[in-house]
Image (tube, rainbow, N blue to C red; front, side):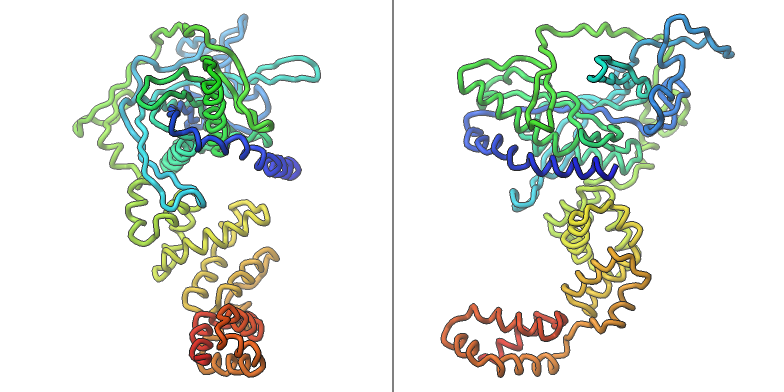
Length: 499
């Protein structure tokens, strides 16, 4: 597992610069071409058993070990004795004409550090949400030239969300999926663990994207479908590459073909799967064994197995991302808010840290969390459970810097101490090593005077107009105090002494 994860990181970094070359030219062509993107998302519902059978839905079980007779419907199998007749299925049950919900929408923010100064708001319409069964999975063995079938997934319940084609970039598509994941994880209805090409992972959420290119104010162009995009970064990259590919074809006078394509994370290209010469006849038919499910907006109706009261369910919902952001906007800047609510685990830990200390400043906690803690995880390739396991240590560390017992460099030292798995809490480490911040103005003034006396040449240069040498005074003070000086106060004191 460790080796495969490192191989994954290596390959992703190797291809990063290569992929940039494919999308550089897009911005120069967007004025004459209009991309249109619509998503279809399959999210695995978090249940212990399959939709119409008692087989478990465990991901890590051996191949074909979570399969009932109903799931596989093997010809010739003998029936099992039940009180009621038990028919083997042999086909996929899905909703088509009567979905659970229609005409919805999701609001989300699009923000990328270094690209956008501020997040911008976007909304995507949901055409319909319907229930569906997952199908089996093909396993191709190139070495022996055989294809095998794993039916562990067959019959697992899915929610299919069909969005209208109202997105214009891969970045917007990735932001929409990220927002949907946040909602589903908050509700506890889907784990949203996506597949990774380089690592064998769950794939509880899979994304298909329909991409077309047209002139502004012209009818939509011929679309291509990108199947089973497996990660947030792949959604962005696959769509942006497909936009570039279609624009290139149209600029050369060619015609885009209606086809299904897949994203190849190794070559960073979309590749042909099959052409769509005509519309498939899926031969949809009613399933007579399933009674209708009635949805009511009536408080006098009690929930039963086939009667669902919408208002009573709505009252049980937790606070959803849109409301969360509205509440946090009072105490966080928009860019900080976008970052902290881009991941459910980050948001929940952030809220927990604030809840455990009423005096803690939200903006400071969020800033430390994003710039320091997440950077540490990224630098040392640590899992997020590292933060959860060391939450008390992190909370005390935040308190120390908020009340100015320590400064930023000491904070970094104490954070790195976590890697050594200390048995002591931050305050004890500070006391034992005398890492307290030096903030007493009289003490700082004496240190600053010493710096000025021992560096007369720098003083002359500063008074002669070379203001850049001011940073050298700060640096020398920083070193002399073993990185413990309050640099904001130090700067003011040196400015006063030099004037």
